[in-house]
Length: 251
Image 1 (spheres, one colour):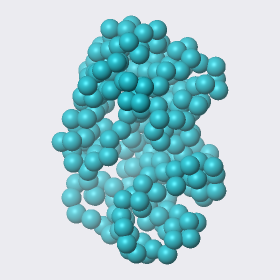
Image 2 (cartoon, one colour; image 1 turned 45 degrees about the vertical axis):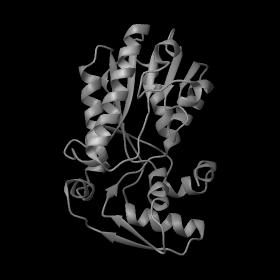
Image 3 (cartoon, rainbow, N blue to C red; image 1 turned 90 degrees about the vertical axis):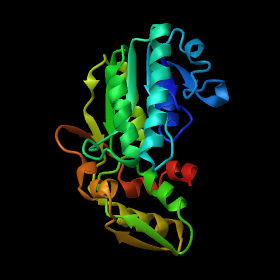
Image 4 (spheres, rainbow, N blue to C red; image 1 turned 180 degrees about the horizontal axis):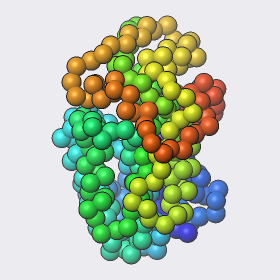
């Protein structure tokens, strides 16, 4: 099978690419470094010739809902149009567990992406995963100084490696509309994860947990990011991940 991975050099994408290679698939990485840009559509149709399935793990970093919506709607439009032109039969989009009632900030973009995929003409599967273990380090890196503020956020984090592997499993199957959610093996609190990562790194920074105002923060605090209903549980705990090679590559 020929699998194209949009965002194949990112946090999840690199693991999806590795898993696809390990399973014997022909893999095409869609990235700007390879002359392909999902935000403009440049190079997409040519890169997708002969592809059976596209895994979309493209991403943007923003807390603005309008920016997130614009990015994901634009990227999805270009991907689906090029997939249709190239005869791709399956579009797999990565989304986030439990965001249905959090149509704000970054999550507004992911919900817009899901709607765009569902409205398109390419058969699809939306695969939702819980927040990645790697998310904690990204938040820590975004703040400077001796004190770090973390919003109240119960979650069930999962390793990006397991997400990448799961996406390849979904890609190997027929389009299903929605795949079973993938979550981590344990319920956790974001602030506690931050403290454990700082302790592991030997960093002397204090973590303050605050219940912040606004729809986005209320959604985080609601516990919905842990997911509910049918789900697949990953095996790598946050503490296991902290001692793995993956955390060193993202540090």
